[in-house]
Image (cartoon, rainbow, N blue to C red; front, side, top):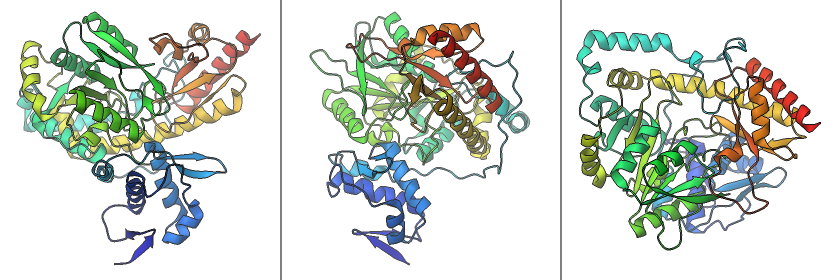
Amino acid sequence: MKQTPWLGFAIDRGADMPVFEQICAAIRLRAASGELALGSKLPPTRVFATELGVSRSTIVTAYEQLVAEGYLSSQQGSGYRLCASGDVELTQVQNLAAPATPSPPVPASPRLGVQPNSSAVRPFRAGTPDMRLFPYRQWAKTVARICRSDPQSMFLGGSGFGSFALRQSICDHVAEWRGISARPEQVIVTAGATDALEICLHALAEAGDGVALEDPGYRPLQAFITAQGLVPDYLRVDDSGAVLPSGPGAPRLAILTPSHQFPLGGAMSPARRMEFIQWASETEAWIIEDDYDSEFRYAGRPIPAMAGFDQLHRTLYVGSFSKIFSNALRLGYLILPEPLVGRFSNSIQRFAPKASSMPQQPLADFIDKGEFYRHLRRVRRIYAERRRFLLDHLAQDFSAYGYCVDHQAGMQVVFHLTCDLQDREICARARDLGLSIEALSEFVQAPKPEGTAYNGLLLGFCGYSAPELEEGLGLLLQVLQRLSR
């Protein structure tokens, strides 16, 4: 078996793990052990590729994956440097090599979508999938097959936790895509991510308890927490992600979006993830990981979930099919640590499940037979094209007004304003022209120090074809030009 050494590690060309992932795993381990010091410059991609006897694209893929995970930083002209601290436990870092995405066939050249219909679309609503791309025929065949072979399964949702078949399919999915090892008994089928969060709060918190929330963050969650008599404790977000709760009376429940922070878009660094896990372990706190759109990463593989780091010790994992499959089915899931299964079972008995039983068995079959992954691969490619189209046009035509930070993930981007215009006024004027744009400042909860205010536009791209995006950008540019006068 041919092996190529580099600084003590070898590429095993006969292994099941892809070569780029072997390179990622080796660099992660050296970062964790301190063998690579913070700030170390990695070999240039061409030089490294020659030394290892691999293609340059393999090295670029590995480096970009580590940039997405927070281990490396890159600047044009200066190469890649190690930016993650080396104090992450080796056993946790080794877990990062485990996930492997499934590889169903990818269509050769998917179409961007239908022609624009100004009366039907309202760019740029964030987090909206394009239901014109939904695999209606394949889904109809699956439903028809279940109706013929096992019709009662569509009306019997199993226990309060949902269909066992779907829970098993979810376990297989998160093991492959998110690095999470769980049994079906730990999974609750929910009516989307919001329902999952509500279930968590009912089971884990009582009136008067504090709940740590990212700021800026998801506004409906803050409103729900306040309505339940809970006390929000806002966590500032820096370049590494949300900061840890601190001070006397700090909450023992935190809701985080570590793989793709909403709305800013960055990923929490590996070191910050481990700090949160250590905090939860030491204070007997719980972390709720809201992984609402983690499948939409456009460079490398999806970042392993915090629950995978934590091995479901103190972390509850919330996922949703609304963003990646259909927002009409209203299905999601919650994965619990083993010790919480009994508590949540008792809690669910008091609150009737909201998830519809009818689509659960068809969805399990859709996943198991690979149709779900074929759809996911297709829309990821199409959304990547739309995202690139939007970013290129913003850089070309809107540079006088602001900029975007490309996090290579998600269903929306933030256009940070550098001009004197205010995001809320821009959004109000844009609505008059039929656009649907949210102001970044609307997601801020706690007062910020002077000079650190958020001022920007949240621009969704997934639900719109390139012509529709182009039309929307033309209208947005009109708004900015008029306000600038």
